[in-house]
Amino acid sequence: MAQDDARSREADARAQRERARRTWELVISASAEAIAPTQRSALFRVLRVKRFEREAWLARLPGPVRSGARVDLDPLRAALEAADVPCRLTRRARGDGAGEPGGAEPIGAEPPDRV
Image (cartoon, rainbow, N blue to C red; front, side, top):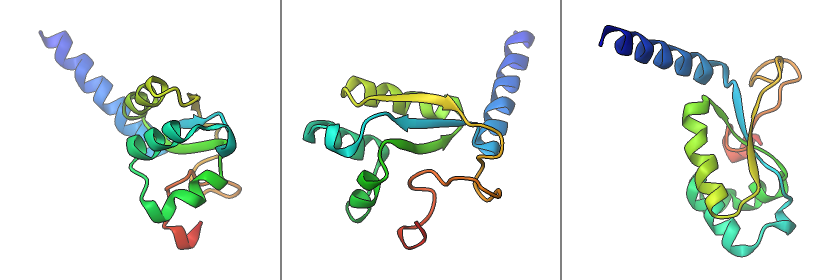
């Protein structure tokens, strides 16, 4: 029982570190032209993309769409894969963090007027 609590606390702490460091990326592997309308619909629904953001999103594919902890991104990846959206989780390279020199912002990280 005590070991389970310790493992749970350790997993929670790891997830918090990954969230803060944005350790993992959810990457869409196909271009907008290669994604069928039903797949686009699933992409927008799963990732909760607002209508006014959709064109900007599509223009930036293929590429990262979210970053954070693996535990948070894995359910999104699974939902996208179930809808046949080509995607994968990758570990971000050091120096790719938001706000760092030369770092890339994932889609949806900034308001549309700053993208």
